[in-house]
Length: 196
View 1 (tube, helix red, strand yellow):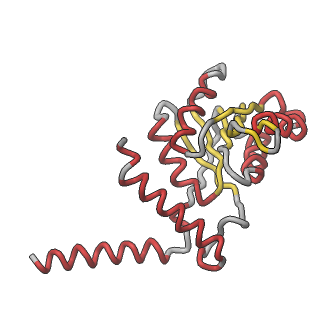
View 2 (cartoon, helix red, strand yellow):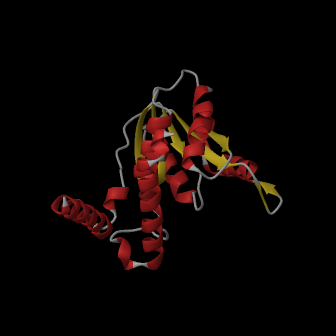
View 3 (cartoon, helix red, strand yellow):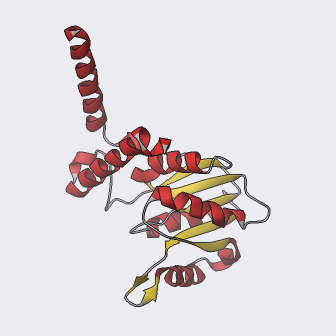
């Protein structure tokens, strides 16, 4: 019995060490495929996500792009209205193909069903969707959307945000904070939230 316990503890310790010492690539999935729609997830510092989504749209990876915008007010301005103004100024000839999808809350898990409601408005109804999010968030976001909206075929595109994350993750303090926080969220999703 002691040998079994020691083997289990050693296995757990080795798994944790392998996870922590990897340069951070286990958080990143980048497999965009041509799809019916593109969804740029909401989040702080979402500009790089938007520009990456627009690049995919202009390259023919999707027919329509939704930019998620968290509902709320900053400095007297609706964030959804700010997103719409931003799209109107920057989308150019692609403006008819771009819509803002208002979402409440700051959790990817809460965002998924609201994105589903926006996707249902498209005609013809999409069957495949590309998620665009920060590279460190791709693994968890893809797992959540596949779980919560299984009627769509999901792929994900990683937007680079070097102010928040890079590899190896231990080179910068901000990267380390992002790595540890996202690793904790991914582990929580895999162990608990996925089953709720």
